[in-house]
Image (cartoon, rainbow, N blue to C red):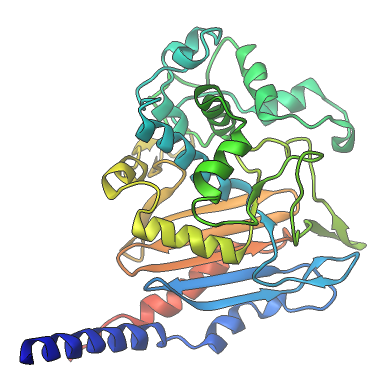
Amino acid sequence: MQRRYLLVVLCMAAFLISADSAQIVSPQQIDAIFAGLKSGNAPGGAVLVRQNGRDVFRRGYGVADLRSGRKIDPQTNFRLASLTKQFTATAIMLLVHDGRLRYDDRLTNVFPDFPASGNSITIRNLLNHTSGLLDYEDLMMNQYRNTPPEQIPQIKDAGVLELLKQQSQTKFPPGSKWDYSNSGYAVLAMVDEKTSGKPFGEFLHDRIFAPLRMNETVAYQRGKNQVANRAYGYTKDADGWRETDQSPTSAVLGDGGIYTSLDDMAKWDSALRHHTLLSAQEMEPALTPANLPATAPDGTVTGYGFGWFLDAYKGLARMWHYGETVGFHTAIEHFRDQDLSIIVLCNRTDVSPQQLALKVADLYLTAEKPTPP
C-alpha cells in the first residue's frame, strides 16, 4: 500500500515538474516575438509551440484572405511549401514498411525508361538530396524563356518526371555530393504513385492524414479538391499587398503541395513523438544525415536525412525544415531531447518564420539551463 502511495506521489511530482517547465516561458513573451504580424488588414501567420507533448502556445495573427478579411486562427490552412517533404518522405517509408520498396532500389527499377543515370540513383539518394538530378524549375524557365510567369502552364509531378527523362546528365555522380533537390521529391511522389497504384494525394490521405485524423489536411489539386479555411499567399510591393498564391510550380505535390493547419500539425507532431506510423527503428534512416559536401563553393557538409535537416543549434540536437514558395514562408523546429516543437506558418513573404521560431526556441532553451551553484 505504501509503495503504491509513493508511486502516485512520484508520478504527481514528475507531472508538476514537467508542467512547471512548460510554464517557464510566458505566453506574453512568445506573443511579443510575433508583434509584427498583428494586423486587421494584412496577411500574417500562425504559431504553435508544443512542449512535453502539450500545446503551450497556439495563436493566429493577421488575415487569411484580404478579400474577405477573414482572420487567421489555428484552423487556418496554409500551403506548407517544403515542409511537405517530411510527409513525402514518410509516404515512401511506409512503402518500405510494407515491403513494396527498398531504399537501395534504383530509379530504373521503378521507371525502366528513365535515362542511364537512373541506374545509379537510389531511392535513398532521392530522399536525402544526393541524386544530382537537375533542377526542374531551371529546366522549365529555360523552356519558357522570356515568358511571363502567369502565362506559363502549371507543371505537375508527372510532368517533372517526364522533363527529367529528357535529360542525359546529372549535376554530379549520384551519391557523391549533396544538393537540395525539389526534383527529387517530385520524382518520389511518382515513385509512390507507381509503387502503390494510388494517386499520390490519395495515398497521403489514406496512409497518413486519415489515420492521424488530420481531417483538413490535403495535397491540393486545383479543380480536384478544395482547401477548407484556406489562407491565400501574398507579397508586399510598393503598392501594398499583392496576391501571389499560385505559380507555374504550385501544382507539384511531392516537393511542396500540402495545405494544413496548426491543429493538424499538432497531431503530426504527436505522431512523430509517439511513433504512431513508423517505429523508432523504422525512423532511424530518416534521422541519419547524409553528411556529404554540398555543391556550395565552401563545400559545407550538410546534415539531411529524409525530409529533415539534422544538426545542432546552440549545442542541442534538432530536426528542422523551412518552406518558401510564392506567397508563403513556413518553418518547423523540433528539439528532440527537450521535447520542444515550434511551428510557424505565414501567408506573406517578407518575414522569416525560421528566425522567429528560433527566437521562441531561445526563450525555452535559455530558461531550461540550470542555474550555476
